[in-house]
Length: 362
Ligand SMILES: *Cc1c(COP(=O)(O)O)cnc(C)c1O
Image (cartoon, rainbow, N blue to C red; front, top):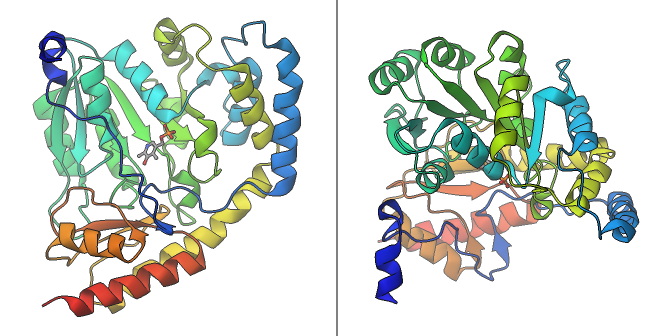
């Protein structure tokens, strides 16, 4: 046993596998999933599409997933074409491929904490040095232009990870920050837009900047707004040279024929799938209002979750909520917890449990 641990790469020693607790409680609001299953006609279409692939399973799939990437480019719009889009098993895999291609030993990536905790894990897994930058100390953890630029100048990273809307704060980045980082960073700038479809009207997407910025990469996912987390499909939009670069490191046939078929069938029903977004954002806004009414600070969210503060012993409150059947996320920020916007009934259950917990506090 210990022999194996001694053989492990230094940077992986003592680490635990990533993952939020998957506890079997009635109300699970901890992984930002869409609470609504795909509508029946979409389920039927996906079933048909997958079934039609089965007879060809003796053959490898299209390793370049051209048809799927064409569909994704059409969905994104902005005049994007298939050579500017790449897909893999979740946007985490896309980001791992970016680190394999542009990071690696002797190179560094910079993120602005609190942000998506998977980014540093992917850096560690690819032997890329991680620079833990910081966001502002204000209640919304805002990242200002000057603070972002200062950190990029100081670290000169090979890759910068921005996240907008940001997980766990829920806030979208000021477009000026993205522009300033692009103007300052010497290397690749990744904007993780996993929650883009939940953003309030008028929120800028970095997709609009792609034409002028060949070092910009925008990553997206079908895991959240599309309610396709189990299907595992993430993608990026970037300069064709970036797409060519990740093709150097992707595993041969990384995206199964079944995944490609299922994702294409889902994309053919975009409107039906995204119909749930309005219901989810309604609950999100309700959560923000309700939390503030309880005196707990919560920034306006452009995602499908809300980060709320004012929680003195956040680990104990997390546990007390679990004991009442409600699972939220402890993101490791003292005084703060993150709650996913679910169904109206889930919001009711969360608020009722929270009220009990806050009342019971000494
Ligand atoms: C959930 C999430 C993802 C999605 O990862 P997938 O691998 O596509 O499921 C990516 N980025 C952020 C910031 C997320 O919160």
